[in-house]
Image (cartoon, rainbow, N blue to C red):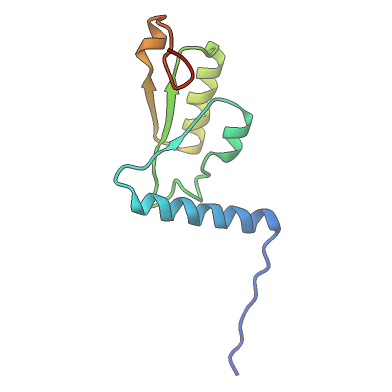
Length: 109
């Protein structure tokens, strides 16, 4: 008789495991995958956990698009948080915004 051990995960743990699986599948298909990072409470909860997406060969960096519209404390928080979870933080500086030029996009001229 073969015995099978059934592990029951909570709903949250099951969703977390499924999310990690999806991220890894997408990352495997991309040449240089990143996870967009925005300073705030919700993105912090969504950021990869060390035992999840940041461990092993399949880890990928966080990307923060810097528009220079944040308070200095928010940048300090971002840097500290990324250090704490061991994330490879990449920052793209949006130069037009940093130079005070009007931001052009799909909604405006």
